[in-house]
Image (cartoon, rainbow, N blue to C red; front, side, top):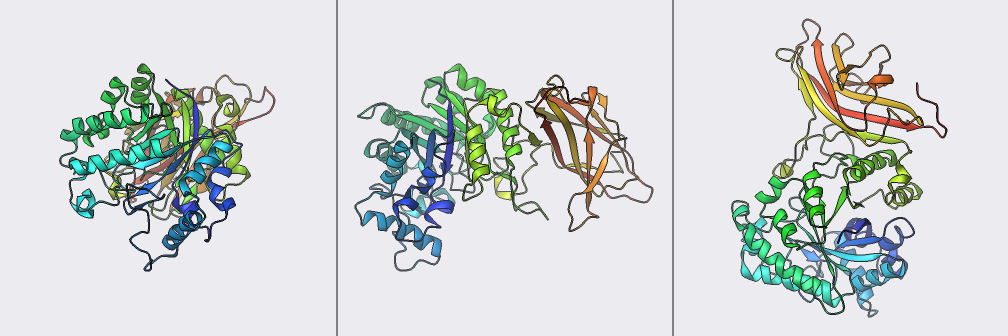
Length: 490
């Protein structure tokens, strides 16, 4: 049965066990839950496993640091072990402490299990080491016991299976060249896991899964998502790629929403934390602003998702982050607040190429071949900027590398030419102002983007003689600003 949720995920490490100094106080042990309590977050998801260890005293898997005691080569790893041990020494189970605190603060608790992480077995079985992964029966049985432990030994609301952590967060569950043909084996395993969680003693539990955004990638990786839905094996799905941490307000998940809703299964949209990461040359990591998160959330809600799922916000979470989390549950809360849309770029991370999905940026205009050629880019916004008289301003921003003022560029929105009489130019980077320009246009009248998906057309018409370098469209952004009172449209 579909259920609306607002979910926050904590990975147990970066903003928790890695950073607090042992011995862990109860205030520190409760921190991941308390920092999102009393917002719209009603479900706390906790990442309990990694390739090299699990973040609770499992009777199935290897507890993180258990094989490193006395020889930790990183302070963060030493803290993980000592923090957990300091609670255990007081007869407190580190995982149960979080579960109890979530329940006290009115939240459901769901542990998230990485499907390529089976620390405690022979490392030669891991696919990252050339092993068979879950193609091996002993590994499948091991993972079943892990699911059972989290669903029955702990007072959780269910279990989440994280298939999307690979690559970047863990190894894969099948060798790459065998994955697709082994899809039926994973489905068979999932039937058992679903039965374990749904028919546990004490009441039915939820089974969720983090999967990839496109049907093609899921099939290639041995994940028969459509079949899972047909058989009713999962209660919710979260489409995402762990290695792509850039917020994407236009993730291609409509196919999944439609397929899941046909089977009364929930889909929660992942709101990644960053506007930029470290992978892009000359760009520093930057968190998405509240207006950017609102824009992506509004698009996801307009697409029909059953809730929003986010993580890794700038830490420690402050008033700005908690304000965003408070807004996320209700589309009405963000409908008439400022939004900042931007288009995702193809990832520069080589290890995610295999699971990446289509992107329209960056877009290169080669003056030798592309003069006069029109490129089309879809731009989706949830705001009704044409009809809502509280919309004060709609600004289209394009970042272009190696642009000069003598270049002639034509820009159209849904066939309507954007006037360049009002263009503002800014440098794309203050460190290298010669590198590129932002072109900013305040859109008026028929130029304004429609609610839904729009057609942005860009053409390089003329380049100065003797300048043969390409122009690269790096970024496309739309800023929608609201006034308190109506009647402010141009």
